[in-house]
Image (cartoon, rainbow over all chains, first blue to last red; front, side):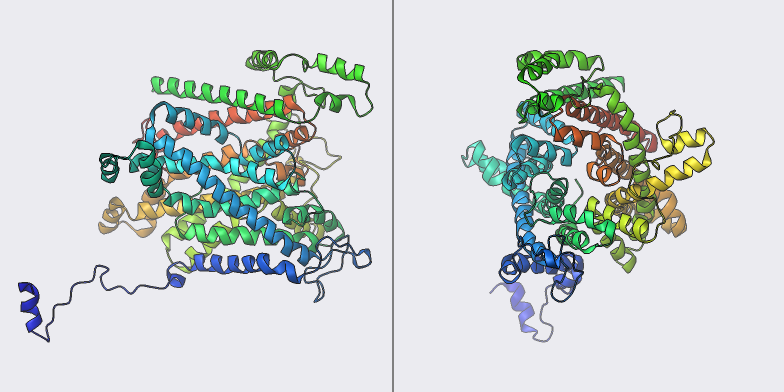
Length: 294
Length: 341
């Protein structure tokens, strides 16, 4: 027993209460600290549920039924039917699986590739850094959408190629972020420690510096997932990449845009709304956790 | 300053050269036969061969590259295999349409985004702030094509307040005499107020579509940089010696928040230089974005290359200009120092 605690412990009533580090503030639940993030998570859960089990419950997304073409929304067809008589809701649900998967996979791939390159540039510096930064400058001088568009044209129209093209358009953001983080990270003492302990520089860069440089990239990845969905569906809207009759939100808006002249708004406005709401869900989360534009 | 400018120019030249190299070799990988596009589907093999010769497509790739660079340095970006016109000329005709749309879109975004951002920062963590942040998230999650369709549906088909998506002016209207290429400005210079008004009505829906999306980053950046300045010691001192809240907000706070806002505007405008392919297609806007899209669809290599190079060049010039604007807004910033936004 040490003397300090013995002296205080004897008093009983005036027992020593250590001052709280947080000044006695209550730890608020996430819902009141970051309400928008919670809204985003709720929306996202609904989407994930729709994408995971929805396709088993709705009608065939490509089955045409000309007799029931262009019906307005009703209880039978929650989002109406399109000009081939296909159920818009069924197509939107099937599309959720495709678009969400693409958005998340693209964000993860771009983050993994980008942060690996970024840590190489930031940790080793010098000529490698200079070369890599000039390369990202070149890539960033293209608007990302145009870059993805050209890459899909080069690679050919397919879902996988769209994934690759959009990933490539987002990789430079992660290179920049991780590089900046690694630059300051490599000056810290634990890096010297790791080096002194005999780790080879590759090991220090990828197993010590990289994990500690990932935080900004993780937040940005959430934002990128939303932008990836917007980019993929924007390309599909232009008829690049994912093509009709695939059930994809951008394809649906593009096909439905023709019906708007005659007043059938539901074929394009519902799927478009699904895109925007999905992107919003990701952006609410990213925004609350300190994500920054570009 | 001159040394800095020199270095800056050197880096820019390297970047532009890189753009040219990358674009040129990507284009050579594009599948499809450009000559077939020019000649049409029923052309004979002889005819195709003749076109390939005429456009230099039979030369080895390195020779094509050297020829291309030699011409590009003199401002000749080649010939569009789709239209048969000079790429430089075709781009210059279409550039003002894209720039006019970009200009008004950015203007709208600034006029709407700055007050919202300032209000959000001044009333942090209140409902004003929350609404502003939701609007910003909505903007950054907005699909151009969806917003464009909704606006057209509501304001053209349903209400009839604005003209339909047929381009910069009505089909029968003669455009004003070209001075700046901006129809709104040229019409005003010609004192044709009705024409100017018409140009504005055709601009309204596409500019709002783009402007809404662009206001999102402006709101975010104004809000965070205003919060940073309002929390700073000099603002606290100013408040302590009795300067009114309003004065602190607009004179000290806003002026210091201007630097990051300028960066944001620069980035956004740079992003808009290439035109917005989707918006230009939806509204039949005759800009460079649509030109590039048409070129891409038919493997019009030279046109697409020209587009990418011009956009890259403008982007780099813009960045240098922004650097100068900084030093004018904030005398503490010397050229050559990195500005941390």
